[in-house]
Amino acid sequence: MPLINNPWRKAWLRLSMPAMAEQGVITVCAVVLMMLYGKVSVQTLAAVGAGNLIFMLLQSVFQMLSTGVFVVVARFCGQDDQAQARQAIAGALTVTVVGSLLVSLLFFLLAGPVISLCVGHADAELHRQSVLYLRLVLVILPFSCVNLVADNALRGCGDMKTPLRVATGVNLLNIALTFLFICGPFGLPQLGVLGIGLAICVIRVVEGMAKLVLFFNGRNPLGLRYRPAKPRPDLLRRMLTIGLPATLEMVIMQAGLLVAQRFLAELGAVALSAYQVANSIISLVFQPFSGIGMAAGALAGRSIGAVEMKQARFYGRDPLRLSAIAAGVCCVVLYFAYPALAHLYTGDPALIQATLDLRIWFVLTAWLIALANVGAWTIKGAGDTRTMFFISNIGLFAVRVVGYGVAALWFSQYGILLIGIFTLLDFVVRTGLVVLRVWRNKWMYIRV
Image 1 (tube, one colour):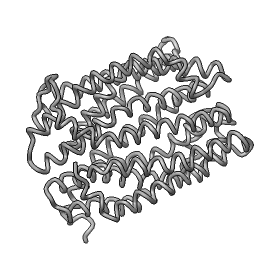
Image 2 (cartoon, rainbow, N blue to C red):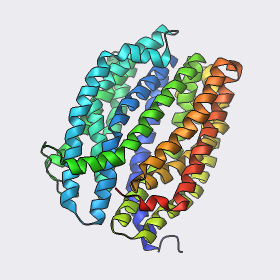
Image 3 (cartoon, rainbow, N blue to C red):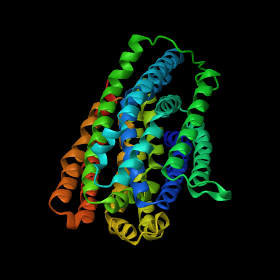
């Protein structure tokens, strides 16, 4: 088939461009922010990583409604049933606001003990900064959860441009505020980890309010004017049935990463920070490919809703094939750019060397994650969230957590090398299973 003239390919490329641009903006801004964090101290860099991991664990609880909205809205749009799509979105937003407020309050009070599980008490300064950062970001958990649901509602409708516009504005604002708060230009105080947390609080509130405005004033693809209302039990049940495996996947994954982070902390702040920096660098490659997956998943879900199975199969396989080539080219470029990028994060020689030691392993991992992201969104877009639950956790627990534990407990002198090897092996397993699932086509016949 011609590269561009195929109308189905044109459709997912048209949706992919703004989605990839959104993910690209988020990733580049996250990399710039991580570079700013690294200029403060190694402990600050590690504290932000630890706090974000716990925050993501809590946010993942609401993944069930976010994923459920994405799948259900895509199906209803494929069936041209916008009324039910509106009701599903309104119910999901109502439950998300109430639930996230309760979770935020509970874990704000438990921040100290929770951080102890993640980083221990060996480094008192790391523990103090981690608690402070976590409490700050927990304040805006409800806004972040609203963002998840609102973004996936828009993507399910096929609107990839609105999330791009909002993400561009708030991420540029985040960089500006973080620079002001932690670098202290114009005579301003240097607030360190406090400034990082304050900047994130401001931008998440701005982002959450912008998304809610779209649903209050009806300026969204479904013309929805959101009013808090009692959710329809049948639609809520459908979304929860679809989203529960995705939530369990994310919760268990984040718990596994929490255990892995605890092992990394045993290897010292340098190893923990090197892991954070290497992840940040390779995200420049793999994260934008999530945009291709989002577009493919939305179109696959709409095709299944319209009972166009041949078209759905195309949206499963074609994006994966082209992504394999494009991601490979990007990884070659990243390999040569990696040393220069590593030096931008910090001036600490030990941290730079540890980050460079992870180079080959993490660049290869970036290619695998890019493919896994594309395939996973397609599978989830069809409602096959149970399969992704098993795939994600097999690689993480059977390979990475075990490997990090071995490194921390018995082979700490080879810690950096083993971190790279077991991270790569984790995604060899995961990506292989995702590609196999996509090619076997069973994901197209999941009832939702």
